[in-house]
Image (cartoon, rainbow, N blue to C red):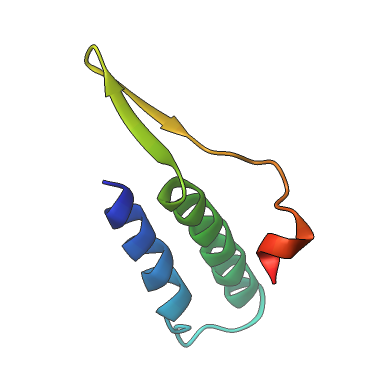
Amino acid sequence: MIARFRERAAAVRRRGLPPVEGADRQRFLEAATVDFQDYAMLGDATATLEDGILRLEIDLRPRPASETA
Protein backbone atom coordinates (compact mmCIF):
# COMPACT_ATOMS: atom_id res chain seq x y z
CA MET A 1 0.00 0.00 0.00
CA ILE A 2 2.80 2.41 0.88
CA ALA A 3 4.45 1.63 -2.47
CA ARG A 4 1.19 2.56 -4.25
CA PHE A 5 1.21 5.97 -2.57
CA ARG A 6 4.83 6.50 -3.59
CA GLU A 7 3.95 5.61 -7.18
CA ARG A 8 0.93 7.96 -7.15
CA ALA A 9 3.15 10.80 -5.91
CA ALA A 10 5.59 10.11 -8.74
CA ALA A 11 2.72 9.96 -11.26
CA VAL A 12 1.39 13.33 -10.13
CA ARG A 13 4.91 14.75 -10.51
CA ARG A 14 5.15 13.36 -14.09
CA ARG A 15 1.63 14.40 -15.09
CA GLY A 16 1.53 16.96 -17.89
CA LEU A 17 -0.66 20.03 -18.02
CA PRO A 18 -3.87 19.77 -19.99
CA PRO A 19 -4.58 22.53 -22.51
CA VAL A 20 -6.29 24.90 -20.07
CA GLU A 21 -5.69 28.58 -19.46
CA GLY A 22 -6.32 31.24 -16.89
CA ALA A 23 -8.09 30.39 -13.66
CA ASP A 24 -8.63 26.75 -14.68
CA ARG A 25 -4.89 26.30 -15.17
CA GLN A 26 -4.17 27.73 -11.71
CA ARG A 27 -6.80 25.46 -10.11
CA PHE A 28 -5.28 22.44 -11.87
CA LEU A 29 -1.78 23.32 -10.62
CA GLU A 30 -3.04 23.85 -7.07
CA ALA A 31 -4.88 20.50 -7.12
CA ALA A 32 -1.77 18.73 -8.44
CA THR A 33 0.33 20.28 -5.66
CA VAL A 34 -2.09 19.09 -2.98
CA ASP A 35 -2.33 15.63 -4.59
CA PHE A 36 1.45 15.31 -4.63
CA GLN A 37 1.80 16.42 -1.00
CA ASP A 38 -0.88 13.99 0.17
CA TYR A 39 0.52 11.01 -1.74
CA ALA A 40 4.12 11.83 -0.80
CA MET A 41 3.27 12.05 2.91
CA LEU A 42 1.46 8.72 2.84
CA GLY A 43 4.28 7.23 0.77
CA ASP A 44 6.71 8.21 3.56
CA ALA A 45 4.52 6.66 6.26
CA THR A 46 5.42 3.66 8.35
CA ALA A 47 2.55 1.17 8.30
CA THR A 48 1.74 -1.30 11.06
CA LEU A 49 -1.19 -3.67 11.44
CA GLU A 50 -2.12 -4.43 15.05
CA ASP A 51 -5.22 -6.38 16.02
CA GLY A 52 -6.85 -5.56 12.67
CA ILE A 53 -6.10 -1.84 12.92
CA LEU A 54 -3.96 -0.29 10.20
CA ARG A 55 -1.84 2.51 11.60
CA LEU A 56 0.06 4.90 9.34
CA GLU A 57 2.70 6.91 11.18
CA ILE A 58 4.11 10.04 9.54
CA ASP A 59 6.91 11.96 11.18
CA LEU A 60 6.28 15.63 10.41
CA ARG A 61 9.24 16.93 12.33
CA PRO A 62 11.81 18.79 10.20
CA ARG A 63 14.82 16.73 9.25
CA PRO A 64 18.22 17.90 10.47
CA ALA A 65 20.15 19.90 7.86
CA SER A 66 22.69 17.07 7.52
CA GLU A 67 19.94 14.70 6.25
CA THR A 68 18.34 17.03 3.70
CA ALA A 69 21.44 17.67 1.60
